[in-house]
Amino acid sequence: MSKITRTNLVTLLAVLVLLAAFSGIVGAQELSDGEYVGYVPGDHGDIVIEVKVNFNEITGVEILNNLKTTEYPHEQAREFFVNFPSAVIRNQGTEGIDVISGATGSHEDYTKAVNMALSIAKGNYDENTYYGVSRDYEHGHYLVKAVIEGEEIKSVEIVTAKNPEEEALVGDKVEGEYPYEEAVETFDKWPSQVVEKQSVDVDVVSGATHTDHGLNGALAQCLTQAGLNPDDYK
Image (cartoon, rainbow, N blue to C red; front, side):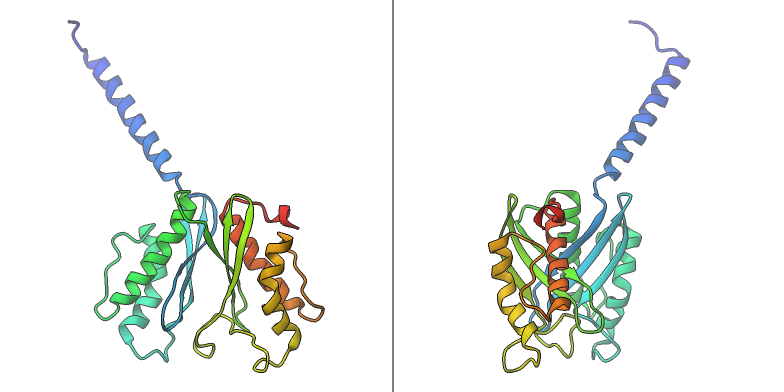
């Protein structure tokens, strides 16, 4: 058996170090760039969190709903709401984020939502249901739920706020309750027309351009997360 010289040993160690470094780089490249939405239903307002990934790192986290503002009665939940996004960015995930006493429920829901978004970013999401958001900080965010199988949009639903005065999502537009008929008609007919036309460019009725634009934009994000190109659905 030949002896291992000092030079050969140093060379071998150097190769092992390079292999370990390369493995670390490959492991770090598990997140695809983009914006991903995690969703968890809730009795007092659904949890909607968007996670932004750039250059394979989590660079942004925003809790779009349900908001814990200064008017929210539980201080611990308010504190966790404020600190959770930066904790996810700092930890590059939900592992290691401490639970604050009095905010256990928030910790569980936020973690589920972020993990859902990250599973889509990692390409190991095994569901066919996606959520897309079109931001509107003045009138309420549009949230769309889409079931996508292969390249086909199977069903679409507009997810609205349970308590519009307390949530950031747009409220439902119901005939007899909402004053603008065009928006009411759009909310009623848009989902079925999307499925029928297989399109992200649905214009239900003249006069509801803002609503159409918001819903179509949210649907486009659903398609993008499903690995599809929204431009192919115009």
